[in-house]
Length: 213
Length: 244
Ligand code: SF4
Ligand code: SF4
Image 1 (cartoon, chains in turn blue, cyan):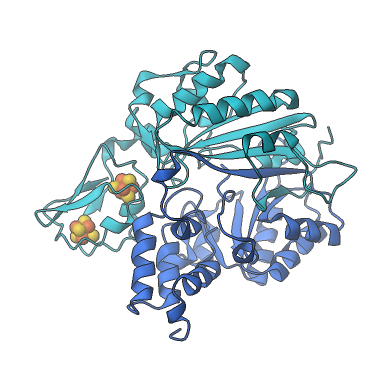
Image 2 (tube, chains in turn blue, purple):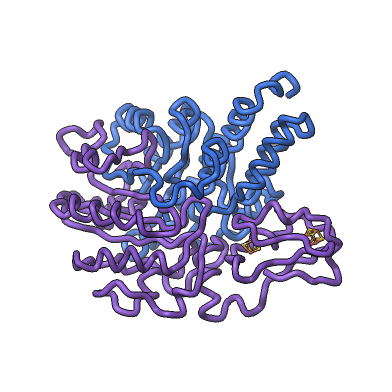
C-alpha cells in the first residue's frame, strides 16, 4: 500500500522527512535480489536512519535491535525506513546507485527535493504517486495538528487519543518532548514514522517547552 | 482482541492506544467493543502497550472468515492469504519502473477508504465500487479487495464482507488518460454519499522531455484537486526498465 504517501504538514515541516522504499518485484527481479537488499540495508545502517523496523519485529523505538530486525527479515528483506536529513537521504541514494543492483527505489518526500537529488545523481525519475488529499466526511478527522503525527504511520496504527494525550503531557510539562515523540512513534511497526520530525512538531505545538528540553 | 477479565486491573493504559476507540473501562475492567474493534493488533503488542498484567490477547477466531477480513485489512503484521504480502495494497508505484503497470497515457488511481484515522465499512467501499462500475474497470489483480467482490462488473461486494469494518480498504485500478475526467467526477460525487473519509492517490509517468518537472495533470483543477507538495517518486533505478 502507499503507506508513506499522504503525510500532512507544511513544506517547512516536511523538509527533513524522507522515506526510502526498495522493492524487488515478484516474478521480475526478485530472484537473487537478497544479496543486494542486504547490502542496501548495510548502507542504510551506516548512514543512520531516523527509524527502522519490520512487520515481524516492530521498530527500534519499541526495543527491536537492528540484529533482530535483520534476522527476522528472512531471505528477501524489504527495505523501508526514514531519514531526517536531505544529506543522509542523498548519500543513501548515491550509494545505492553505485551498487547498481537494478532494484526499484522510491523516495517519499518533498517533490522539489527529490527531483533535485535525482538530477544531481543523473537519475531519471520514472513515475510518481501523487497525494490528492482527503475527501468524504472530513468532519470526522482529528485536528490538523494531530493529523500531522498520525499520517506518518500510513497503516493507521497511531490513535488520535495517543497523540492528543502526549501533546497535552508536553504542554503541561509532564513529559519530555523526546519521550512523547517516541511514545507516539511506537505503534508504527514498519519504521517510517519520523521521530525527529515528531519532536519538531511537538516543539512547534508546545512552544513553552522549548527551553525545558 | 479480547481481555482476560480476571487479570485486568483497570489501569486504563491500553485505552488511548486504540485507533478506533474500541476500549473503555467499565467497573474497573477494560472492555473491548467487538463491533468497533478492527483487530489491528496494536493493544496486544507487548512492546507497545505495556499492560502490567498481560491481560490483552488475540481472539483465536480472528483468522476465521469473515472476521479475518478485519484482521487482514487492519493489522500490517498479518499476511494476506490472497497476496502473500503484508499490508493492504500492492507494489503500485514502488515497482512501476519494472512492471509498467501504469504506462504513458494512463493513470493509476487508488481510493484508500477509511484513511486516515476514521476506518471504513465495506458498505462504503461498495458505494464507491458500484458507482465506478460504469467504467468497466479492471481492478488491480493483486489487491486483496478484489477477492471480496460478489460481482465485479456491478461493483457489488459479498454480504459477509459488508458486515465488516477495517482500518482501510484500497480500491486500486488503472485507466486510460481520457477517462480521468469522468472517473474523478464520479469519485468526488460519491464522496458526498459515504460515511467515512478516503485518501486519494494518482499515479502517472514523468514526461521524457522534462524529466525534472513534476508531471502536470490539468484535469485536477476542475475538481478543486491539487497534488500535495510531497509525493512518492519512483527514481527509475529498476531493471529491466519499462520505457512505455
Ligand atoms: S492495560 Fe491491561 S490491566 Fe490496564 S486496563 Fe488495559 S487490559 Fe486492563
Ligand atoms: S485490536 Fe486494535 S482496534 Fe481492536 S481494541 Fe485493540 S487497538 Fe483497538
